[in-house]
Amino acid sequence: MEDKSMKTTMFTVMGVAESLLAVIAQAVETVFAKEIEPERDLPLGNPPKPEMGDVTVPCFLLAKVLQQAPAKIAAQLAKVIQPQGNIQTVSAVGPYLNFSLAPGAVIQTVVGQILLAGEFYGTSQVGGGQRVMVEYSGPNSNKAMHLGHLRNNQLGIALCKILAAVGHQVIPVNIVNDRGIAICRSMVAYRHWGQGQTPKRAGVKGDHFVGELYARFMEEVEAELSAWLTTKDMTLEAYKALPEAEQKPITKEFEAQSALTREAFET
Image 1 (cartoon, rainbow, N blue to C red):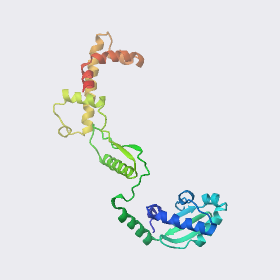
Image 2 (image 1 turned 180 degrees about the vertical axis):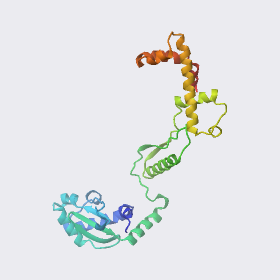
Image 3 (image 1 turned 90 degrees about the vertical axis):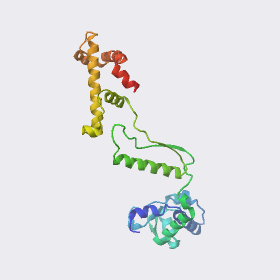
Image 4 (image 1 turned 60 degrees about the vertical axis):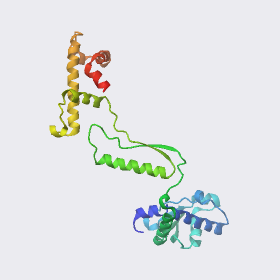
C-alpha cells in the first residue's frame, strides 16, 4: 500500500481495527497475564513516517495498566504477535508498536463487511439522536448562482447524509438569501423605472442591473428628502452636515411620510 491516504484510512474501517485490537489484547494477556479493555487501553494512530507502517499503538496507556515501561511493553508484544490475517509485519520503535497491514487481507475484510452490511455499511448510532443543524449554500437573490454555490450545496448535502448515517437527527437549512430592504428598494425601483428591461436586453450583468436600480431608488429618495427638508427650512447639505445623533430624528420623521420608503418596507 504505497498511497498514504489509503494507509491512514484502511485500519479505521469496520472489521480491520477490531481484529487488530483483538490480536494485541490477546498478546497482552499471553505475555503479561492481564486482561485489558482494547478500546480504552489501545489507541490506534498513524506512524509519523510511512516507512514505519500503517498503524501504530502508543503503549503509554498500557504502561499505566501494566506498571511497566512503554518501550519494554512494545518490544515484548512485537516478539509474540505473528503476522496473520490483516497483519503483514510487526515492529517496536521505542514505546510504539507498529503494524504494516496486508493489502489483500484488508481488502477482503472490507469487502466482506460491505457485502454483509449492504446499504447500511458504515452507519452507526454514535450520534445518539442528537439534533444537528447544518446550514449551507445561501444563494443571493441578487445574482445568479455560480460553481462555488453548487460546490457548497454538494458539501452540505453530503454532510447531512454523513451525520444522519451515524445516528444524528439532522436539520438541513438552506437559506435563500433574506429579501432584505436593499432588495426591496431595487424591486420598487424596477417597478417604477425598470420599463420591463432585463439584464440580457440591457447588456449588463444581473447584479450590476439590480445595483443600478438600487442606486436609482436612493437617488429618488434623496430628491424626495431634499424637497421635504425645504418644508423644514433646511437644505440637504445642511442635513448631511449634521452629527449622526441629530440626523436620526429627522430621518425617522422623513421616512414616516416618504412614499418610496413606505413602499419598500411594504414590498
